[in-house]
Length: 99
Image (cartoon, rainbow, N blue to C red; front, side, top):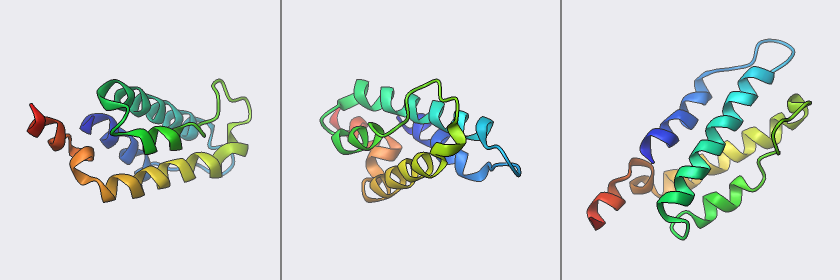
């Protein structure tokens, strides 16, 4: 869980060259989809809200991904907000305590 979230967070430090953001956004969508899979496999109930947020990820392949830029970045921002309120989920510490 922590690794998948860290990869999504790392996309914040990338950026788009002038013009098309296709590669950057495609990578971000891929990282979001990976995080979604990990959350669903880990505990779908615990991660119900972030999984709900992820329902807004545009379907792949996205031919005009640049037009979805704001939506994709908003998903990441909403997840960042959720994980900031649930830091134990972002680090994976809560699942370790339950073991």
